[in-house]
Image 1 (cartoon, rainbow, N blue to C red):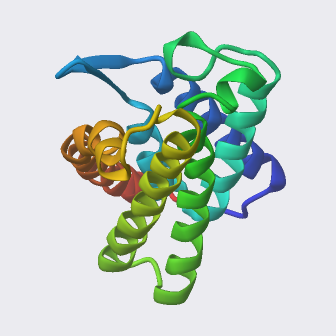
Image 2 (image 1 turned 180 degrees about the vertical axis):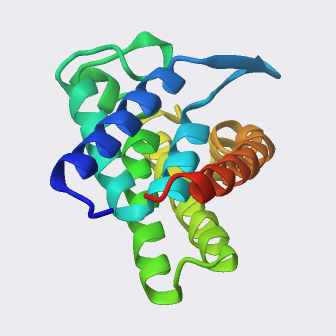
Length: 177
């Protein structure tokens, strides 16, 4: 079946909507809300690849920027993008771009996909933590900022990425993207 521009736009829009909805699902864990946003991004990366996910994330950010409440905590607008979690929101673009570049270089085998995801997600953590440290740490050290803004999310994000990979792998067998 030949892929069309409409097919591409539908997939990108669908995953932008999925990311938007999953961003609103929060599970309080150890006093820190864990959103399902990273699950949706991982599923998109594993299912659609880096190029389409980059477009889906850009669309998601654009939708939130114009004021629709698609960011965690039902927030939206430019203020949410420059707030404490803005670095993580923009970090999703970097994560998608890293995934795209690494899978272009190494292929789309299991190891390449997992390495691309890991590198991209580490870049997401780095950008988000540095954004938080520079603008919102209130004198906390970088180590304290990392403990507050990254450490609580490592294991839950790993679990979400694993589940997303399994689901995307199973769906990709049935649906050729």
